[in-house]
View 1 (cartoon, rainbow, N blue to C red):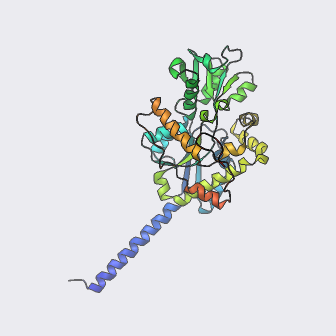
View 2: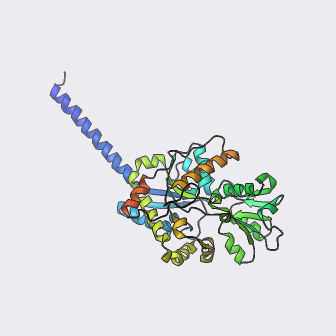
View 3: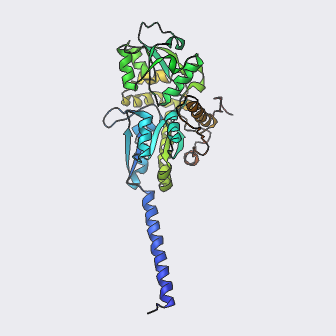
Length: 360
């Protein structure tokens, strides 16, 4: 029996409506994930674990992301990785996390290996590295490291700045007896004199106050080209399915960046970050004579873009990657721009040119 043309048209219309409804329901579901997983490229401290030193850390400690997603009943998981950037890249590749806070070099290595991500905002920029030695050491400068046992946390954004510092002093890693040590292991090795020196971060200030180390060099003294950058990124697949959630996360971190950029909050900020296990005094030393706005800026400005391209170029030169990496299309500023507009923060943070000079 041949179906009537009217019934056929009605059936096709009904099928189309049902399909549209299913697509709409699917899209609504995609816009409201049950959980947001944010990977952190360092080991957390405490229960639940926290960290310090960046707008992302401040957002965690102040529960800003959780508060932003609470109306949608979205759970937020902060997942810490002792293996730092390389471990975060593995988790991204396996889609075990959606967002990541990590440094410039690990993200470049991930991009070189095919990870599809977008960099959303800066989170802890213009941070230096320090060279520390045991008290009483005859090492007075970087040039004295030739042939010495030196701890370096390879695969992190500490490594590339360290390599550039060595280059400025006529050395390479091959001139040293490099030992790959994570942050905790490097501190222990330095305190026990198991190494002659380590390149590390603000964690060295505590050892110095305890009389277990002496900082003999700070890379920031050599200019902003010898600093490292960090960021918040998102997996492309997650961004495509959950753009509204990405916007809420970015806005929450920008709010945290605004709060920690306020000089009136300097003492409160370092006290807050001390919950990470790093004493407030260490944060005071790390940020001494530096503007909170300069270090806390989330802006994707010419300086940030140029530094990431420079990191990619250096990684190729040092054979850390096998093929060139371009940053074109990697940064996605629309969420940051919307957050700045929503929060009325246009012009709040200084912008820097590719050389690190303030822009008018």
